Amino acid sequence: MQQQGASSRPRSSAYLNALSQEIEKRLQQALASSSQICNLLEELFADIALEVEDRAKDIILSREEDVISHAKYGINGRLCFYDVLADYYVRLPESGKPILDLIVQLWSQSFACHVFTLLFHKWLFEVQPDNADVLLRCSAALVQGATNVFWIDIQSNTRCFQSLFRYLLDEVALEPKRLNKIPVQAQRDLYLLLSRLIFFYNSVEKLESFLKLCPAFPNALLVGGPADILVIELADQLLKLKVEPVLLHYLSQIKVLQGMELRMATSTRLKTCLYSFTSPGGPMYPTRAVRHAAWDALDSLFPVGRYPRHVISLFFRLLYPWYWRPSSCWDFMVSCIKAVFYPLLRLFFSRWGKLKEPKMD
Image 1 (cartoon, rainbow, N blue to C red):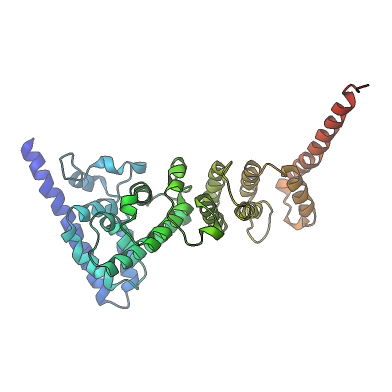
Image 2 (image 1 turned 180 degrees about the vertical axis):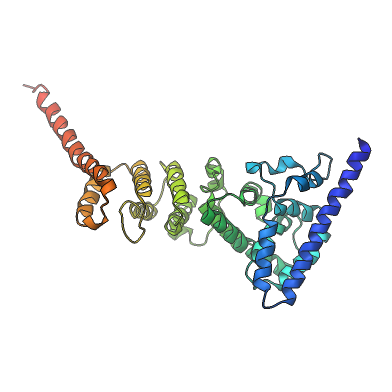
């Protein structure tokens, strides 16, 4: 058993070292080929984002100390190459230095920030460069690269980079000691990025702690507190979403904002955003499922004025009959009855109750 454990460490280290050498080789090829540089970087990014095959897992994973443990990668049962390599460059920073030097020479190229974020997101907070200028550039590249890779998840409705998000949220944003290692502006940009994605990656249970650790913003007097910043980012994110399952997921999760104290401007902004998804046609062209989810979220977050909103919406729909579909005629008729008949019924019973009250002499 001791010989087996001793042999597993060199085997694992040799495999990871071979991966690092391959990455370095492909970065050198990209640097030498100006015509194919974008394609080569894109291919490299796609490869390190792949899930590790079962055969490779047997080589990489081990229960021995100082060797990567499978327990660290329990998110959705996925273990990707970037998960393994990010830890490897923290344990052996010298192995990642040649790769980092090559990436710095490729900063201006597409997918260079993607590759840096996947490989060195832990190194930036746990090893950290000595030069302040390099730290500034690496911090900006981290936020930009994370923004891009998370958007890939949103566009494909997958969670391939959930482990990256969890690290940035749990180990950085919720750990002030690590967060304070990067410049203040990078802290703010990272906080805004996580605000837009905390619902997508199903982390709403950490929302309260996340809001308490909001960094200071220079425009806080105009924008509002942490809750206002979060809601503003969410509203902007909703308007950018074009993938129906992702939009439905956001609309179902957004109900947790109920009862949150917001400024009037922020509340109006969120209400306007949700209302834009309740009507067919432009500019959002929402599907029927999205319209129903938007109405549910709107009625849940803003119960005051619920029935007048539905009545006004129905009258406006009557003005645009070309948006009607035969399959939704029955649903439209039911909505009309509910929107018009229910308020009248409530008014009738309230008046009837007043008439039955005994008059005082």
